[in-house]
Image (cartoon, rainbow, N blue to C red; front, side, top):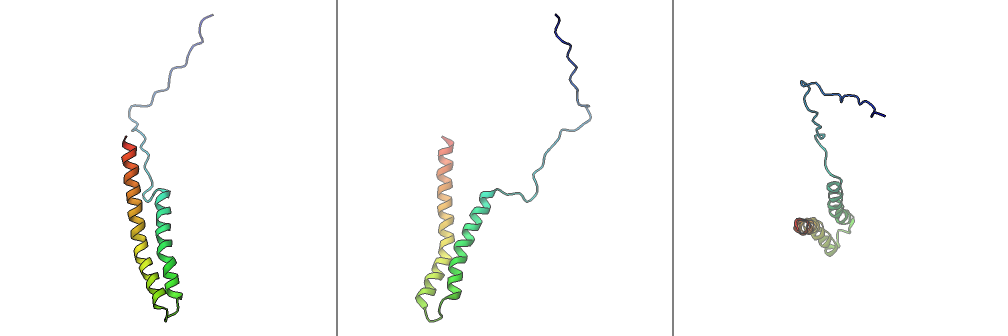
Length: 92
């Protein structure tokens, strides 16, 4: 029994340009949103405490102010170090 006849493959017309898929203009990864929310939460939690604290409690207000300014920078440093370690082990 002879093999069944195959249909010829449909060829694209030579004048059609290749299909290029573009990413939306403002697309960003989900982990960026997570990092942004963490930084904002770390900054706004002591800010809330700072605003509600007793005006006579200078030590509590000072601690909240220092934490509010230092915590986001510390988080950026930790994320940067973790990213560099991840990149170094990924190359191997």
